Length: 461
Image (cartoon, rainbow, N blue to C red; front, side):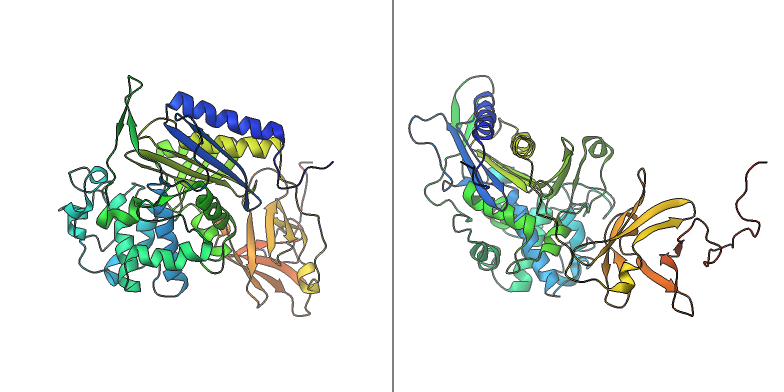
């Protein structure tokens, strides 16, 4: 008997259950729930609880804190894709009079705006949003702590501004826009701004005794776009699949890929830790794999969504305690367990349906000076250029439809690539942002800048 492709093996399921059981027990969480997604669909759910009887399932709501920011980023990028704003626009262009208008929309998305991490006292997560009715109450008298665009500094008020921007351009409340444009199209009917039964209660667990204290549940008001949402492992599993693949009803695959791309300069400690930030998504290098997603916390709740696009595996972990298990580690471990125990089976290789002979002619080895590279045609119709040995500059290039290509990543991102031909139509060389790539090292028949010594290659002799 064969095991269905979508079903995890018994050993894998036990390893996942063991990991969340250890997290709940050692982290002293009243409850902890988790779901694993593979191939765009949930393949495992587990729960551990301190209450005897039925444990929470995929439909029980927990507060997800700053995972809300990823939803807000999706709304902003929808506005960009519709041409209503540009990420390089200063906030002042669309939302004047905030006192932080010199920060660009991209700065706000990537937490490089220079804004403070928190709103002025009292502690906003544990007090009613009615205490901060206006943006000026959220930002305070000196909203900027750092020069705009110079460093990554996580900012909750920054995402409050993005929520206000969405409201201004859509002419409707942030939560209404979110439901209409994201939650309903993706089928996230158990994600909401306020708790809907069944939902978990939030608890504080005493650090030195096994006793608990209920945490207040506050409406964050203006701060809602930074952390208001409640959701379930079932809904967040669907959201994780969207962040991996996109959905043209909400955002294209290309735009969600942009969200997953580093957009913030990393602090020195972040370089060591292998973490950075994209557009509404946290990015980390862990256990040899690139993980994207977001963590969240509010008094009484912890949340994490972790995704490995390469492994096509995601994990969602939720707990109802103010502090306790480190859910980012738990989420990364759940992804690793599945990815290592049951590696992704690649799709069968298939030849391309057709190929342009003039493009096929470009395939093969090329030399930049004495550095050897290979140009390959991809199944998607793009080309890739990478060193033949060791590390070095590499990139994929998207066809522009006019015989040229544009770099998509790395050193050559945005750089033009074109094939240069001689008057008789034969291929001379490649021009990549003024760099000349030739079929032979310093090919004397190509237009190598500075020319090639007429005596050619020689030994010491």
